[in-house]
Length: 287
Image (cartoon, rainbow, N blue to C red; front, top):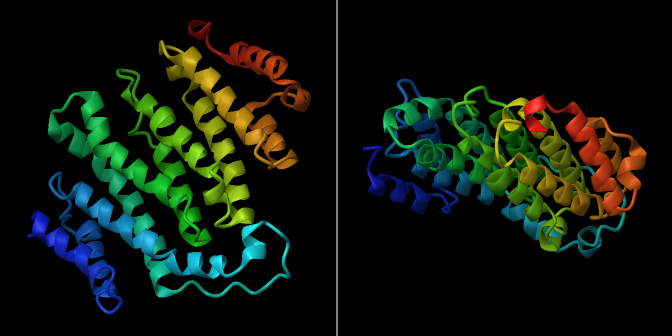
């Protein structure tokens, strides 16, 4: 039954109904985490899509509250208030992201069973999970956003993600990290939670540097390495001019192990010095 498209259509229809949403979520959770696992290649993407919908619904009330608070929307300081406890919808959203994170453990087996070409398999099984995390990393709900970001980081550092035998996994930059930065730089996204989104920009800049350095040896053998590095520099330049100031500069310098002065130089000189630092740390094959 769980492999039928009609079954997932019914759950999607129940999700917005407040009385039925808890039951629909419970069923989805049982399917995704139960033993034996009922998630297969036939319902994998449907399950991720529904969990993503639950997470999005968890931020609906927060959006309404922040729309009633124009001072917070403009980023003006307000008197500290006790944050209300997350409601049931938000808690479901947080749990939904944790479930999606658990589902990444099924990806290697699905790819092996599929007999697809490496790039097709990556698009079919890794990308739906990453798209879900990207969506929720800009959620107005801080609880959902932080859970999604933590899950994204674990997924990007998974031992099952990258391989020296093929390079489709390098899409983690062009299809995951760069799009996430682009979303975070949108004014309308920033205004949903100025303080929280500013922090998320800093965390994402750190993550981008961390992932680049983590895979540096394998990337050094890839023909697209130079273009990737230049795009990272462009992304960092945009982030450092997005209003986060010294916080972001400090995080970039500490993660990339470059002098602070190199970051605060004019753009051409900054690129030159950062590139020199990068190439000096690369294996010989990268130069």
